[in-house]
Length: 640
Image 1 (tube, rainbow, N blue to C red):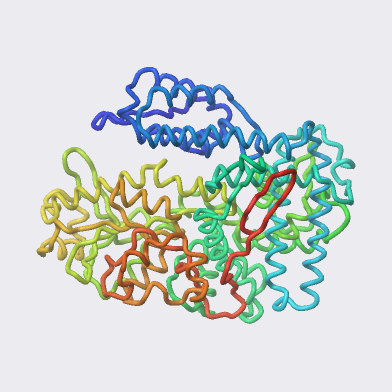
Image 2: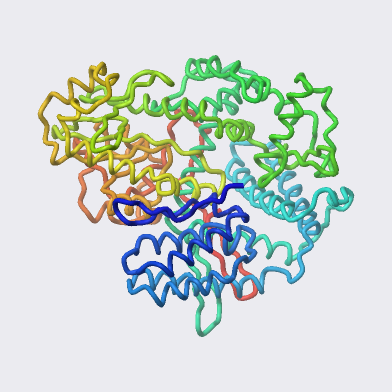
């Protein structure tokens, strides 16, 4: 296998691009990363590489190279490497970051000793988690039998709790050799409260909140109490994204009877919410049926999407809520799929990391179904996970997002990419040996050009996934490339026509715009995203790359000359309680002025929460409920 290179030097700037979280999560890459890191420290004057050092600290924290998502430690020698970095670096921010990181590791180690049992019986923990999962599933069934609408908040809270419990089961399964597991042991249900099992789950949650959501860890010198505080910007951003994405993709299933769709059709229509962008505030039957028509006969792994959706519907019917959580899959003849295609699908859906994505488990050569995952499975999410690594679908999703953004700007003068698929005519030009590409150039209300970048990210199911997904803005050089393209547009402006591709010269909107005179010196760039970004990344992109970031629906409000506060779910009395930061109010920005450039440096999540549908049972909470876990002189504050 080819070695992954983590430190790549740019010949022009003499600076280094340093790796991806996903690559560093693979244990086979750890040795090479540590080797390259030591070589980098040994051969360079670290005072010239502040950004690289901060990136190294971030990667060690957010990846599994030192401490993984289970809270297990690896490659402890990295702590000495960090101490060496601290001695050689003189920058205060770098030194403080290393000091904070090392102090956090000490406290996590103490938390581990208190919450993590000395000897872990993973099968025993799985048994305990399954008992609590079944208990909460029974509560949900009871709530649904009485009144879904009245008990909706309780149901949502229980569903989130089950997600955490199933995640713990997933992590325990990952530690087992499934070819040696006794199924009878795995299916035991152990009743009664066991603090070791619950404390182990809480330890994992604490580690994940610290690694991915920047939870702070402090210790009171007098009481010796350790306080982990996850009530912060990144966690709120995760809750916001999760809530909006969940409601969007589940909407067709919630109203499938009203739309006269079968359950399978509603699932495919829900997948359309993931693939096709729509900035309209109201969904209608025509929208859902149009997406269903486009998607249902499309194939993935040689199976039509409508047949895949039906597979999950039949799966839920076949495996009822019984006593055994792990049940042998014996339904090959029950599903109307060719044998080879079904076997390929089961392999794709077999457990690797997460039971929510892959609810089948191969044990001693046979497939088993994990019933709690089937009971709570979101078929739209699983279908999207099957599609998201397919370039064809990602290109379609990206183009749909771009086109929806362009369609929202009909009252503006702009040039944009045109066409579909391989024939899509991008705004490209070549200068100084480099090819530059932009999505669109828009002339705002002050007659100033704005270079627009439309970027779609995968919707995250967990804090870990959200951190990895948002890091692509750096790890895939999105921000760096966008800035380079913007700088080239600002430098060459109307001369771009001389350098552009032959195909681009047939783009009428681009030709018309570039022949006009505008204030190019005041041009600015804007990234429109399908995800809400946390403040820390918004500020970083603004300060380092001069890129403003805005969520897709807030961009729609701006081009429609509406207030950013319009259609939010949070009510006015809660304004200061749940704002991510006070920069917006403190800076006296006029949110209703008719100018796309009226974008704040850091946009609070509170004004990005809104109900984008007119249907009443779409729930986005007006305030976020907080939880508190206490055990053995440890406090963990988090969002439910």
